[in-house]
Image 1: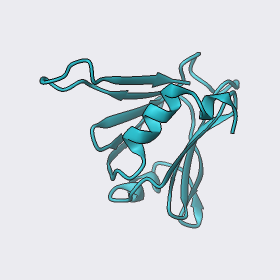
Image 2: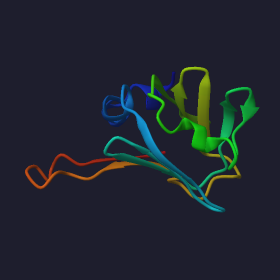
Image 3: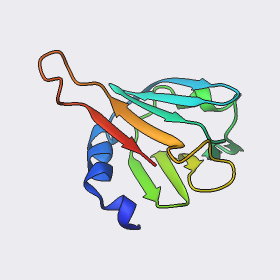
Length: 123
C-alpha cells in the first residue's frame, strides 16, 4: 500500500466505509455511484474487478446491494477498490480513462447536530 493508503484522509474513508452495507448503486454512462451507509462513493472512471464470477458492468454491479464492505484499498496513481467477500469493485485513478484529477470521491455530509462531521476524500 502506498502513501495514499496510509494518509489520514484514507483512514477516515476506511473508517466510514468498512463494515457498512452497500445500500444502493447507480451505473450511468459517465458516472458510477455507490451508497454505503451515509457515505456516497462517486466515480467518473470505468470500473473494473470481479463480481461473483463475472466482470463489473451495468448487469452485475447491482448484485453488490446488501453486501458488507470488508476492505478499502487505495493504490496511489493506480486504483481505489472496495472489497466485499469475493467481490472487488475498483476504479482507476491517474490514467487516461479518468474523468479528471478527482476521478473518485468519497463524501459524507455532516449531520445537523455536527455539520463539521463531513468527510470528503478524492483520488
